[in-house]
Amino acid sequence: MTPIDGRAAAAAINADTAAAVAALAGRGTTPALTIVLPTADESSAWYVRSIGRAAEKLGIRCVVEELAEPDALTLAARLAELSADPAVHAIVCQTPLPAGVRLEEVGAAIDPAKDVDGANPTSLGRLAGGLPAYPPATAAAVLELLRRERVELAGRRVVVVGRSLVVGKPVALLLLAEHATVTVCHSRTRDLPAVCREADVLVAAVGRAGLVDASYVREGAVVIDVGINPTADGGIVGDVAYDDVAAVAGAVTPVPGGVGPVTTALLLRHTVRAAGGS
Ligand SMILES: NC(=O)c1ccc[n+]([C@@H]2O[C@H](COP(=O)([O-])OP(=O)(O)OC[C@H]3O[C@@H](n4cnc5c(N)ncnc54)[C@H](OP(=O)(O)O)[C@@H]3O)[C@@H](O)[C@H]2O)c1
Image 1: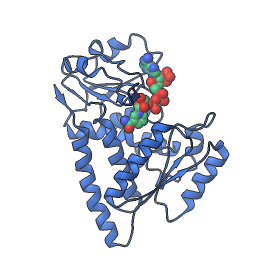
Image 2: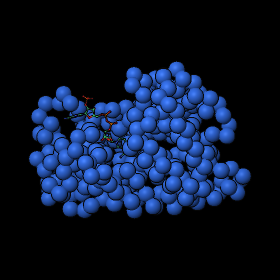
Image 3: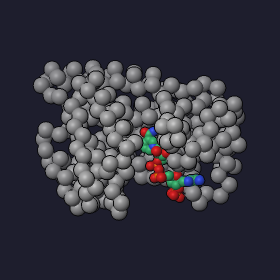
């Protein structure tokens, strides 16, 4: 079994991003990302701080704007203001959102040209229509890892477990664009292990620690674990029971060190592109 090294992939992406930032600096532009943090959720605050550190290392300005549990109207109004601000190139509205606020609703206030984490339903629609758009960075990270591992997708069976707007659905659209035969599973899927065992490539984006064990995996399959589940000791584990699955899979992403670092690297790549970089 080959472990898929997300940290190495992220380092390679970041090297390209640093070069693009330097080229932009030569034209007098510093890419500027604003992340709106609308709750006091501790793990998203931690995640956002890690994006800020990564941005700083690459010469990207990153402002974190903390809002105290705004309602949908207030949050959408702030996202619209940032969209209209020429000093802001890229906007992320960090989830989780306050109770009762839906990302589809407030994400629509983000200008698609600045929507570097694909939160505006227009971005997903453009993706479905094969038009240029920023996919959610996590969904893009799944495809980036498969591309870097040179995993053949055309004509192959891919099973995605999870159908959220931020991960499962955009991943499925991106895989279809690569000509994979895609099955999307969710909480109502019958006999999930049997469906998953048909996969040449299995993507787990559920949010249930260790749900995917060896009984879900065909011998030699490539397994991408998107899940981030907190553990009692302050760490994180994925949706895949790594050691169990490693015994049958051809390649697996670890958690941490798989999809996560690539997600951050792609968010910053998208930011530089939104600022006019390559
Ligand atoms: N690595 C990263 O950068 C990154 C970024 C974003 C999210 N994540 C992680 O990815 C995971 C998924 O995130 P999300 O935002 O997509 O979560 P979500 O919105 O809660 O969606 C979870 C999906 O899993 C399905 N599901 C739940 N229990 C299931 C079960 N027992 N069997 C089959 N399907 C089941 C749900 O089905 P229904 O639709 O039927 O409810 C839903 O479609 C989480 O662990 C999250 O922390 C990671």
